[in-house]
Image 1 (cartoon, rainbow, N blue to C red):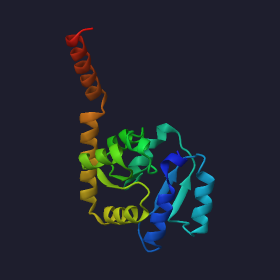
Image 2: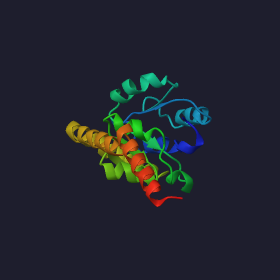
Image 3: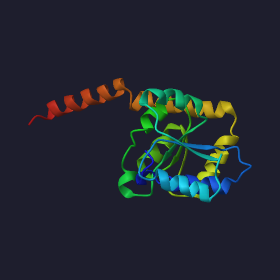
Image 4: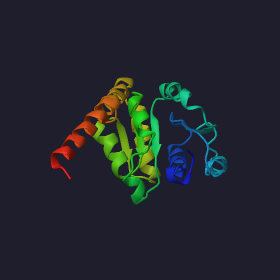
Length: 180
């Protein structure tokens, strides 16, 4: 979703800061109410080739798309409500075995950091995002792969169907013990 909640202007800021010589290329996939503004601003900043906006793709194509990426971006605007939520894309990102680059506050950043699944910076901080993207790109392939595997292990432990059913069973058992 290329909407206001994603705060994707931070990507344009980061891409501008990294400059033309950076190997970092940002691909934003999807549609939304900020798409046209992002395209216009990317053009104004002359970011062609460094920031690419790709139309929405069917959900069945996402695993292939994730597998082709060196890292997956999770971006949210600075907002206390968004800092308390877990975006729906975070779980498939973790499951994909790819490192996550998060520009987010609160719970999403905590999960990425706690999992060792990638790098997290403050939402809306283009300078920090540029620095983290450059650092991630500079890591050896093995280090990025280890982040992806750590994300998958975290997904399996916290978000897989088995993990969720186990927690649900425990919660129901506790509720039954307490009674009405």
